[in-house]
Image 1 (cartoon, rainbow, N blue to C red):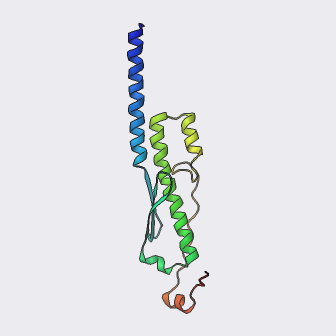
Image 2: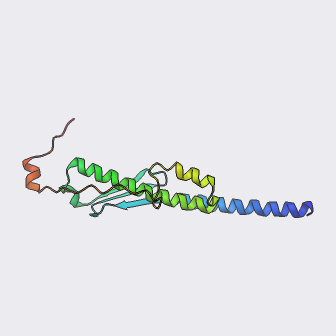
Image 3: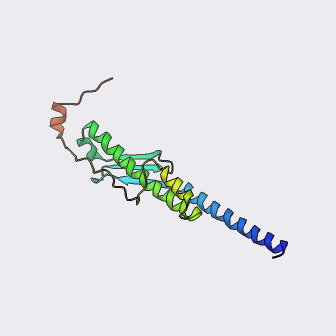
Length: 143
């Protein structure tokens, strides 16, 4: 192979790598995870990095104790993070294939990712209280 052919092939390889990187960059910018509790009362949206970007509470959350609501929000947030992480894994897999680099990405996802064969924790059972019971025995508020 003459030097001009080699240079042309090398240039083509670089252009393909740059195009793949731009495609992965675009895909990663669009990543976001969403999850909703089983009862539909809590929905959480997160960014690619797992930061909460939206929290939607429906009227049914009024029936939950504050501690239980906090647990549900955290559980749904973890599910949304796993959803976002699965999208990150898919984008990176397109860029680097099934390689050690992808293994590093997977290993550094704090909540894992949807489809990693790790069971998500069981949903916390919901305990409802009537409004009368709530107002007769309100929770303590500590400053």
